[in-house]
Amino acid sequence: MISLDYAFHHLESVFGIIVGRPGALDRMDISAEGFWRSFSAIVVALPALFFIWVITATTNVAAAPGSSLAALVATEAILALVGWLLPVAVFAVILKPLGLGHRFAHLIIVRNWANAFFSYVMAALFVPYLVLPQGHAILGLLGIVLLVAVLVAAVRLMRAALDCSPPTAIAFVAAELIISVGLALYVAPGVGGSG
Image (cartoon, rainbow, N blue to C red; front, side):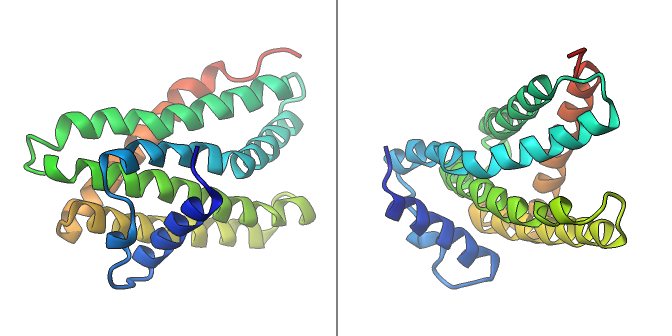
């Protein structure tokens, strides 16, 4: 198991890449051991993810009273886990034919720690949903600002991890977004159930 110092170091490195700090990627553990250790980011992210799942599920239960809160939280958890791991398999298949196979470890390590970083950012931004009425104008604005900020950060992280051009980074981020949205739409019809 990794130490807190190790986790904080990599979360800080992710932030450094996002803000363009020189050498931020080089400070990460880009090794075979670092590759496998980076999946510990899932555990690091769990408190923030669980908070988000519960808030989201509670909102959905309020909108559909017949739904089961436990089932919705479980579905959110499954979606998050599959959404985290499925692109790893996709990248393993497509990077080599694109001549980027040598950047696979960089990409997965950066992506794993970035997912943990974004989990806490999103959890913090979910707090207004607890204190403001649903449908409040500021919530919609906050959602748009968050989406744009995350997409810009994701492109910067992808570009650093793959050492590629902005269009290539944008294409990879778009592909991952399509996979995530497609997965959510596929699972969504079966969500809930009677409580």
